[in-house]
Image 1 (cartoon, rainbow, N blue to C red):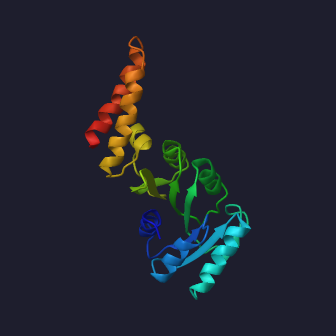
Image 2 (cartoon, rainbow, N blue to C red; image 1 turned 120 degrees about the horizontal axis):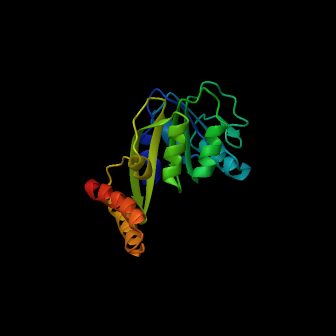
Image 3 (spheres, one colour; image 1 turned 180 degrees about the horizontal axis):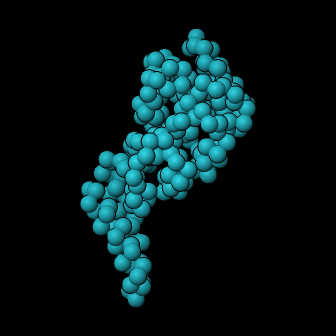
Amino acid sequence: MNLKLKTIANFVKSTDTVIDTCCDHAYLAIYLKENNMCKEVFASDISEQALNGAIENIKNKGLKIKTFLSDGFKDIYEKSIDTAIIAGVGTSTALSIVASAPKNIQHYIISSNNNYEELRTKMYEIGYFIQEEFVVEENDKFYPIMRFERVYQRETKYTLMYGKSNNKNYYRYLLQKEEEVYSKLPKKDFITKFKHSGKVAYLQKLI
């Protein structure tokens, strides 16, 4: 199992009853079950082909993991689940899964493929706050992973933009991108340059 999935697994608590909503081949659910990392784990996927592969992998491991063929939570009625993992999809898909979730889901572990500021902001607006964030670097790409709970955490515009990881390589990467944007701004656009200089200064402090 790759580093990203292992990191997601480490965000799970022993008291959680978990569903991996985009389980693909169920590697994560199998890992959680084999290592007794949570109270119980379930697996689901929107793709019947992917879910059939997951079921076969679970069977080959001799494990008992209940699976669901479902678009988000639309066909999941297991009320004991309190923690949802959403990984390997974009932010719009992740947020649509959250929007369809029942009230018993209290914790989300999300690893989106894009639009991290939007993800943090939307979750913040609906009352889910980042308790942990870690950035994994694999194959020259960065993957922010976040655990959201209904435990208030104050955020600023910058923490919503850039997160609360301790990965300095990630912040160096973001700083380089922001500096490139800043260098291309028209010299006469003082207001935009001033606002953007705040982003650059913030990232510089993190590294």
